[in-house]
Amino acid sequence: MRNGQSEDFIDRYLELTEYLPTHRIYRLWGALALLAGATQRRIWTEYDGKVLWSNLFIVLVGRPTAKKSNALDPVKRLYSRTRRTNGKPAFHMVPDNITGPAMIKFVGEKAKEQDPLETGELLEYSPVVWPVDEFADFCPKDDSAFMSELCTLYNSAEEYAQGRIIRGDILLRAPILTAIIAAQPATLESILGSLAWDQGFCSRLIMVHADRMEPRYPFIPIPKNTELNLMPELAAIRELYGQYFPSQAFKDDFWRWKQEGFLPRPEHTKLVNYVDRREIYFMKLAMLSAVSRGSKIALETFDLDRARDWLLEAEALMPHIFDAMGMAGSDQKVLLEVHRQLIIQYRRTKLGFREAKVRAALNRFIHSSQVLAAWTSMKDQELFRLDHSGYYVPVELEEDGPTV
Image (cartoon, rainbow, N blue to C red; front, top):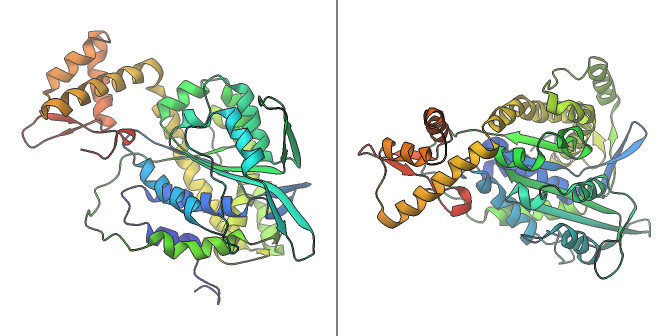
């Protein structure tokens, strides 16, 4: 309990998912994606002349073996299984492997909500959640038009006329999207390139990076009914409605920090436009903090402090994403292709490889002067593990199933 209120949802989520072999920071932002999806277009605050909704675009970034899917799975299950008090699904979750135009159609035809309010008015809106295993499914390469549509869904206009659907125009009534996406640095480099970072789409992404995991005790019991324990709380949060008001102490602290430049702030050149949006993210996260601790109206300094901690932690790790993107593009494709070929061979023979064998495979694609650096990168990315006999065994990537 905190101040006579129910247990904090985020604290409870982190406790119940501690058994998962994935990074805590991924699980934290998974919890925030659940709260953002549950409250979008139902709670808001006013800031700098605008209404701010609680939705987010979150990108979990890491190497292929970073256990991103382990963090996404409970979010997906809660999105798909939670029911509202009237028995209807609490979330409209975008189907897997959907195309851009089909996603817009889904929002227009499947996600319409008409909720009666205590005032007698009818709340009409189209809230959608989208947990995505691969960034390429969320944002196809060279599709700037769809990037623009994603920005529109993020901004949540009152009405959005979409006229590129085959069966005629679709009018989206107050559409809004929360997305949590898994991505590899190489995929971000391939899809976004260099120009997209200067556009509005990338500035709407909160990128959360994690690297290799420290050794963890592997015999943590799996708690029973993890999702069932969280569904009633999430369903109750789904029914919240109303404006959140910052306390005077919140306003004073925020204004003082804004005058100081919101320090510390990211300095990477690719984050220039993102930095301009940070104050919006602090306010959105403060709302989610208040929801998590059970507040139905007030934003307190506790919420600002917690929002600040969450975002500054993520921002401190963002430069690692761009460092990893340095070994991207064609070079990374070579590493993954060699890894894929050796995975196929290992599945057939169940025999590991000497280092010379892997380096020879690399040498078929790249110059001999680059082989050592490429092999070092493969080991750094944990694409291989060394078995007890001194042979290198290729590690299954997340999209291929459980690790070897």
